[in-house]
Length: 258
Image 1 (cartoon, rainbow, N blue to C red):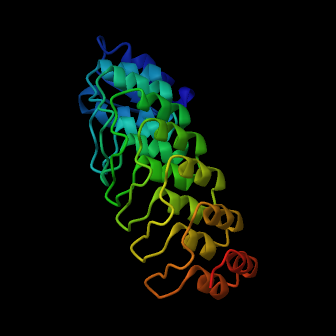
Image 2: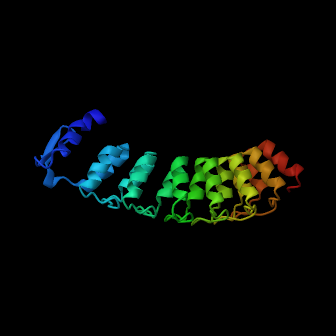
Image 3: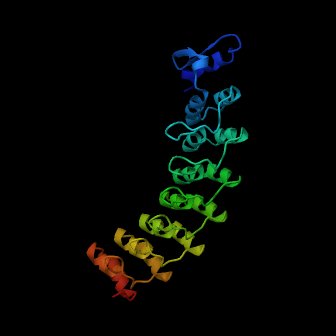
């Protein structure tokens, strides 16, 4: 990347004498150059030196293009903590939302960028912001299996029993994905075991359907209701048999399921 834009950096430094800037191999008039869009492109690669130059020439750190992309989102997606800090130091809105109401905290949590999550949580950030699907940073961190980030978010008062638009909870997500370590972590923070989603399915039922035996054992010990019926009239035991989960069916029956 540096080889490709080396001439650009050099030419920008001489702009008081010249009116052109080299972008890659293409030379364009500086008056035509869209500094805002170039800042987004540079943020994607995390080039702080070039980012400072663009900001110095007036690039708007909070500008979003027609797709909803911004320099901050690109820096977070790329895992470039120093570039995120650079943007923040120049007034970037850390609660900026994308086209689907996603926050940069959600993006960092979903992608597993723990150091960026830690930094953002140290700022004035909305921890429980929801996207258009009703998901939060916690929900997305759980889905991605990022236990350390889940812990960080819980430590900053992330709502453990928050529901999305389908009434899915983080515990249900952990049960669905088979993340036993995260499931235990959520339970230790008073996650409710018997909440039901829009199809009236519980975390236990989701674990049974996916065949996550360890999760089933943990939830039964945590007091999961084995008698509840979903919108199709099936119980956990019905689902175990329907899905051919023989060992899980035995576990359920041993625990008293009928």
